[in-house]
Image (spheres, rainbow, N blue to C red):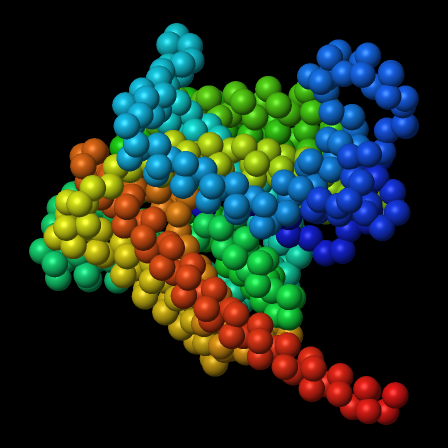
Length: 464
């Protein structure tokens, strides 16, 4: 699994209202961003402080906060911070409070929505995550790199091979270690890429890396997300209420027709989206599928004279909620696994946990690299401009950061709480190892590109 989530887009016009000058459209904090209101005297400020302290943010302040949350580094940091809080909380003297909060049930029982907070985070908030990921994927297919088969072939093939290889590695390692039956249900766990985490790592390092590398990673990750949704819908769905599913399909058809009629009213779409989510949940299919389905039906090509299509507009507005709220809260409820002296001993002796770590750290990067090489070798497709195979190897390792979606699949694959906790720990360990190794490789590639830039600049300096 985008806390994630940065839009797949080309250069955008400056569109942040209330911020002017060089900071307009910025995706990060900047000096003076929250000081656009007129100055007031100290007396007026003191007199009005109590009344204004809890007032709503101004338009400029809200836009600036949303811009900060769109920053890939911030989104990844929030998710990682939430995971750290969960781990510390679950292993503290207040772990019983963590368990109580996570299992607290809220929601209307009459609608079969009396769910625990943990389930609301996984089924509800992650639907927002997959909605944003789906909007990115739709825009890529319609107006982005994926609209040209020659440019899309390599990253798409890398994504597919990057899902098949870790699944095969998981099965091979697990069966070699003696696993059988239910333990093998976790084969899909190492197939996912956490788009928010991966883009955050790349954003920290990419000062001299070619822009095509980010586009490659983003395309790979969103195709991964689509693959994860298909796996969840087909493999981890026990039974289906076809009547509820048919109702969701009818509403999705209505949503698509409204998009074709160019209806823009948000108050029409929100109830439809909520109803689709509820019906998909009632059908027994994991409700995150609703988010991806709605996104893929959203219009992504702007009309003549239209500044931006609905897919771009909605992603720009919903993305900060996904990165700043949905994904961090899911991480808070999903990553809190108790770790003791016996945990690592249990990991070493658990075939599924070993297979998850090997699948993420070895299977995922090997699959990405092999899929990209095979496609470039036997078709006319080529790597993006300025990319080398060393870059693809580094991105392949970064794709081994499974985290969000891998944690979700873990909860769906296993019923035994002890097994779930062991495999979640393995997901966290494997993702961190992959992130560290990828960071090392990317730092080396960044240094190599910096040297090339410096060497290219030397003749100009000498001529001056």
